[in-house]
Length: 63
Image (cartoon, rainbow, N blue to C red; front, side):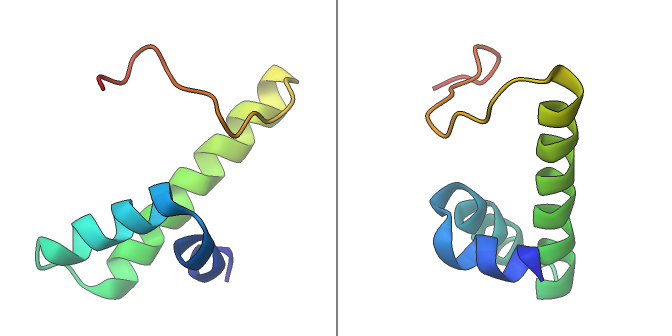
């Protein structure tokens, strides 16, 4: 259920969802990819103990 709402309200995750669907994959598979990304993000925040920063940009991601 979180994947549905995230795809509606978060541009980054919506772009991920649309990119996967555009490749010809099923919508359910795209939602599972969004769910996995959310879980990894939540786990990383919980593990590190840092406060969530919506404006954070990874130095590993190329612009």
